[in-house]
Every structure is written in structure tokens, then in C-alpha cells.
Length: 446
Image (cartoon, rainbow, N blue to C red; front, side, top):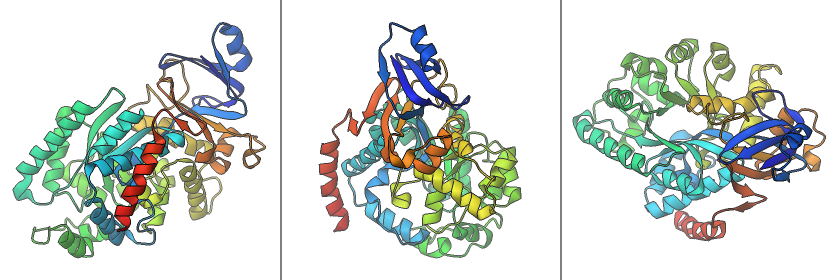
């Protein structure tokens, strides 16, 4: 099958005006100019997508699909009240209701041109949703625990959950572990999880240096994480000795910084912290909208890139962002850093699109499969319509994608050569999901 488009963006080379992509089975067979491809493969079926930009499926490297149903709940709260409300409401949902929430998130991602995710789940629902709806990526089992007296039981539970997810995963989904954060996982438990991950070759993910309260907790052992949060989760009587260092330095001292770790947020850092991350090969998930919405600050992306860190884009959950699509994330992130640095050259549209494609793929160890349109890679594709006033004229497709396009402009999402989404239609039962969601929404409101 040949897909032709006004613009084809391979990412690995310059955009092709009037380009084409040849898909054979699950893979990309060829990429080139439309006239050359049509003459080269005269017998192949041709689908002319028309006035679109055709490019690799987007890669969202930090999501929590379990919480999609909580979109808009706690919109005007700061981090600790927000997460407290999130936990309280999510604990009252059944697995079936959380699964429905995860399916809603997966459907939203697909309709927004996202084909690969790195999702963190406490329940495993996101794995089932991603598997059923065809997404690619890494699903991380979330881990909590500050009581070292129960560390044996915690580790046994972690291994059991990891093995269960691994047995349920398909070829498109890897399984990892996600120790939640430095304030919710003890140092000893972090070390044990890191050892397990090294032994089993398991990818890791962790929320790191997200809030000022987290840093206060680590530096002084005071603040809301030392009092309100620990009391709320039942850890008030568990001893805690502040390491009196930054979040990044704390992990370095524990010996758990390594190249299998994806650090999420990384807002509260200095140059020494970023150097430690780079030296240890740690990757970063940058979530500018979530950080801004919760009032946590602005991660120093320009410094990360200058240090040579691998950085990809994530949205975090719909509960802390309201959107799981990457178009608004790309635009907001680019404009935020230009404004913050007072420098229009600090970040370009091309660099941001690369963060949402090939760099995300590289961070997840999937660069040989996805992230660019190249021969032999998986046919994970997204097409965005430019046949509207808001997206015209197009001088540079990178600029159009970042500054003008939105998730609502996506007309096609393909994974493994299979058309998953086209013109607002899915291969799944979207009406059934929406109707069931209305009932869960009522329960949450009550």
C-alpha cells in the first residue's frame, strides 16, 4: 500500500513536498517523492491522503491512563491537595471503572496521533487498555513503600505484580517498574528495586525533583511531605532521616542512577544535578504543562539539552494536564522556554518534534522500530490535515505542526501497518465506552 501526502516528514531527513510512504505488512518498505514511488511500485494500491502532513506516530513518554476519568477534578489545586484528592477518589473506583478510564485515555491518545506511550500504573489497567487498543510502548508497575520492616513483603508483591503484567503483555508492550518518588519509596527499597531491574533487565521510571516540597523533605525532613502527606498515607510513625541533599544527589548516593532510569519532571535541579544525570545515562521525561498547571515550576530544558541529556515529551495524566495529546505540549513547551529564557533561538519547532518522535523512541529503547519514517521500521504513522484556514499557508511543516496543528486535526493513526483511527472513527466501540463513562463520572461527582 502506498500512502501519498502533500508533505511527508521522515524526521531522519528533510521534509518531502508531495511525498509517499510504502507500507508492506507491519513495516515501511520505502519513503520518497510521490512521482518516484508511484513509478517504482506501479502495481501497489495507492491511498492519496491529500492536504496532510504524514509523519511518524507521536511518542508520549509519561502518562497515567488510569486517571483519565479524573480530568478536570482539582483544576485549581496545588500539588499536595491535588494528589490527595486524586488518591482519595481513585481508591473508590473498581478495577473495571479504572479500566474504562484507561480505555478512554488510550482512545484519546490514538485520536491525537500518539502511537507509543510510557505509562505508569498502580492497577495494571493501562496495560489491558493499551493492549486491547493496539498501542506500543512501556507499561511501568508503580511501587510505593517507606516501611523497611516490611520490605520483604513489599518486594514479593512487586515481583508478583511485575510477573503478572509480563505474562499479559504482547509483543508491542514492554513491562517496567516505577518506584513512585523519593518521598514515597524508602532508600533501601529503591536499592532493592534497582538490583531487581538490573538482574532482570527491566526499565525503570520515577517521578523526580518535581516539587519544592519534595526538596524540602529531603534537605530538612520538614514541610508538607513530612507531615500532611505521611499522615494521610499512614506513614506518620515510620522513622525518616533526611539525607540533606537534593533529590538527584540522593539517588546518586544510593547508587540507583543508571541508564535504565527514566526520570520524570526534573524541575527542582541545579547544574550539578543535571551533570549527575548525564554522567549516569539517565533519561528525562519533560512535562511542561503538568508542571505549570500544578504550580511546580519550569524545568530547565535548555540546560538539559546543553548538558547532552536525552529528553522526551510527556503529558502526565489527564488529571494534571487535561490533555494527553502532544500538539499542545509541543507548542506550550516551546513558547514557555523561549519566554522564560527571553531567547527566541533557545528551542526550535524541529527540536520539539524530534523530542516527540525519535528522541522519545531512543529513550524507550525503540529507536530501531519507530520514531522516524525509514525502510524496515514499523509502520507507525500519523497524518494531520492542513486543509483548513488555521493551518494555511504551510512554508515549514515543522512550524505548522508545533504552532498551528492540534489533536483535532489528526485524520489517521496507523500502528504496525494497521489503520487504528481514521476520520474520527476507531476499530473499537467508542460509543459504549462513552456511555459507561457517564455512569462513572456520576459516581465521582457523588
